[in-house]
Amino acid sequence: MAWSSILDQERVVGTLRRALEQERVAHAYLFHGPDGVGKRAVALELARALECPEQTTEACDDCRACQKTRRMVHPDVHVHLPHPWSDEGDRDEEDIGTRIQRLGENPYAAVDFVRRPSLSDPTETSNKQVQYRIDQVREDLIRPMSLAKGEGQYKVNILTDVETMREEAANAFLKLLEEPPPKTIFLMTTSRPEQLLPTIVSRCQRLRFDPLTPESIGSALVEREGTDPDAAAMLARMADGSYSRALDLAQNDALMASRELVLDYFRAAYSLKVDALDPCIQEITNQGREQVKTVLRLMLRWVRDLMLYRAMGEDAPLVNVDQTEAIANFCDRLPEADLKAMVELVEEAVHLTGRNVRQSLVLTTLAQALYRTMRGATVKSLYVPLPDAELQAASRAY
Ligand SMILES: [Zn+2]
Image (cartoon, rainbow, N blue to C red; front, top):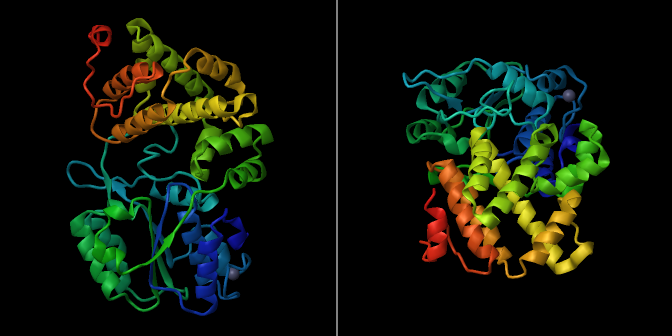
């Protein structure tokens, strides 16, 4: 497989292959870009190429070193994840071995403690803070560096979600980056490079990762997961360029139910009736923050489908192909609806769910704002006070 296992990202892979060929691999890389587009997969593949003594620019997939890197048991390739910590300052790392194994089996799978607090139950959510703290940097990075080099050609440290490193930890790590031990390489991944200390960013060679094309995601789902081609095409369009998200969606039996919830929610927002809206919001929030996000993302797809249908009618390449009738109905009944404003409001709600805001409040406020935009009113933000007397009467119940 080697580099051919990487979806898209030709520019990044080309840069790294040239660096390998010319033996000019940097001692620190920062792979940045959206979630689920292959930053960890590329980091692992680069580590494998570096450890393989048989070939220069990619893993031969056959030698002892390659067998070890594939099984994630190579003594010189270390994958670090930010950990959840208890109030007493202990880190929870019970199943870290299983997580790393799973990453080896599929480097696009979600294994981090934020999106997968429980490996066995993908719907479980956690409010624990997940971070790299100084203890972890000392024990896992600084101390092993002082030991002699193992059997590999390089010591490779892959640090995922590196923006979660606390400042104290980052300063300790910075010392390693400034004076890296020989033949030591740090591969860092992040989807939020702006949250990193500038002193760390400036020590790295930065490589930007782009969202994947729906075509690559679709064919990977068919070839690697055995997904039915029609379902794969739909999931690929829903995944927003992220193969990890496509995998989540493909394995998520609740997805279809969530799509129904979106439709219920829009109907309830249209009428703004408490007896319709309340149970719907409760059902969405019951399953935790990640479920709220999933439903909001599905909402975005839904409103974009409305835009497409309004512009192109029956020829529109809808994501929710099977809901064409509901989409057509909505467009007919609400010709005034400000769809662009609706997209922005839902995006704002997605943003708010990541903050310390009560999820039901976000969904209630969003429904009130959608009620107005569906009737052609301009609502620029979920925070705008609602002057309409009738609407206030309707919303008093919340
Ligand atoms: Zn090899």
